Amino acid sequence: MGARSLRKARGAGITALFLVLSGCVLTGCACQAQPVTPPGSSTASGSAGATTGPSPTRSAAPTPTPTPTPTRSTPSPAPSSATPRTSPAKPPTGLASLSLRQRMGQLFLVSAKADGSNLGATAASLQGGVGNFYLNGRTSGGVDATASVVAQLRAAVQSSQAVIPPAVATDQEGGQVQVLRGPGFSAIPSALQQGQWAPADLRSAARQWGSELRSAGMTMDLAPVLDVVPSADFAPQNIPIGHYQRNFGLDPATVAASGNAFAQGMSSAGVDPVVKHFPGLGRVTANTDVAADVHDTVTTRNDPSLQPFRQAVQSGVQWVMLSNAYYDRIDPARMAPMSPVIIQGMLRQDLGFQGAVVSDDLCEAKQLSSLSVEDRAIGFFNAGGSLLVCANSWTASRMLDAVVARAEADPAFRSKAEAAAQLVVRTKSAS
Image: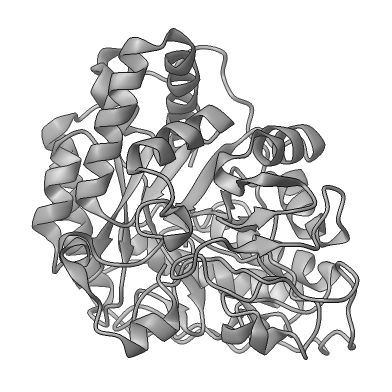
């Protein structure tokens, strides 16, 4: 998700009316004062997926120590590993009773400021049919304040339709990418630090972090990052991931073991993990949030760096987020969210993924600036996408308008969009 760059969040005054309306960051990736979005341009040199240094020594994880919050209890955890789900053949209960616009609204995840500062704009988008939301930015208000924001946004969804509850997400990776802080939330270390723990310890810690999210009303965490940064020397140049220590390690095996331990811990707490950013952002040097024409020139369709994603799919993860980069050795003409080769060929066919395909932010990322907002939405769903992340409430409503209009005019597109809506509803209902 997901996600404005840290550099931009720290440095520049966040421009624009758009940000006032929506809150600036992508879901899939957030860093520092604002959530960061995944992306990058130039790629790392060297052989794909190779590690140039030893894997960090694993150590026991420190016991999570959230600030106590007396008014909330921790939910009972679910099983300790993600289990593959079997999708029923018939449409999810209640979906058929919704209008076309409400059904298409299930395809969108719109941003809201975690501190509640843009509730009006996000609520208007949700009341207009958008079916899901995520919290971005930063808040230190704690569990109770966050739960209050979530409750108000849930009420906005219910004012449109009360049949299907929304997915409620945030970016809670750890380190510089932790949206929710304050009483009741642990201070989560960076992924690079988490990657030094034994997987069992990380799984246990993530279960605690997931319980905190669940107490605040979250149903999804836009984490973990499964991108492989090829070396310690390259990490500082890898702006979206390595620069902020969002990677669990420097080789596919370490990232797979730690990333999937994190995912399993979240799942056991009743929070769906969203693994990201397929097919990987560990080799780029620019951030697609603030740069256009970002290319990975190294990664191949059968790259060793895909191991963490392959293992996550085999473990039963149900949400996979794409990057916004181009992959020159896979589909050089199309960005990942517009690429049937990446979505249908690699993710579904090669890896066997049957869950929901989530975009990174398609509304504010500069990488998408050559496309109209309408074409971004239509292109994503035509390529096989399931859930579109949008960091701008007004733009999300425009995209929904475009999807409804295309569905009314184009039976083939409508069939794809209806199937995607069914998949999203089934997947979030299984949580």
